[in-house]
Image (tube, rainbow, N blue to C red; front, top):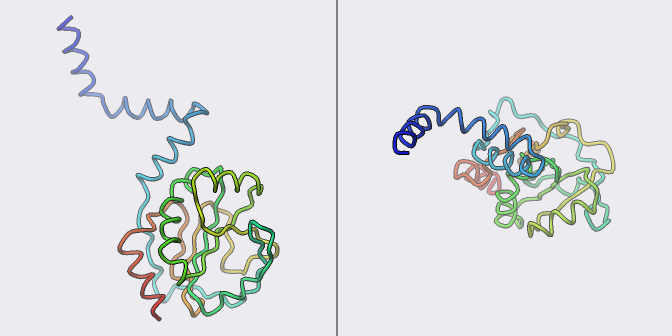
Length: 194
């Protein structure tokens, strides 16, 4: 028994990384664990979004964009002109989106009086409501009801944009991000103070 145990432990120590990869692959193929494992991996791999270099910052000129909140109220994005804006495209079924939602809720709670937040989704309203309630999220969810302004269009999830008061896109991030890093919030606070 002892010889078998030591041989087994030697095998594990030698091949632990390969075993881990195989276990993750197996867990990703099981429908019941796929989302949880994907969310976990995305959280681990999330990095701080990089600020777009000033010379590469695109500008949002046309702010006309009809939106509807989750309660059915309609309004126009034009109300956010000359304000700092955070836009996030997401879905309830998207593991990278789910992975960054706790950070985004925290960011929203901290800055909602200084920044206009838009969490845009195409999901069915009932799914969104269940997701928000299950996770105790309070960030504002919107549905696009007209064409999205030219420099704010994206087909990837998640995608986030941060606009300065002058309409410059200061952050343009596709994929999961660490939105509560000191590096990101320092730039965000500078934008608010402009």
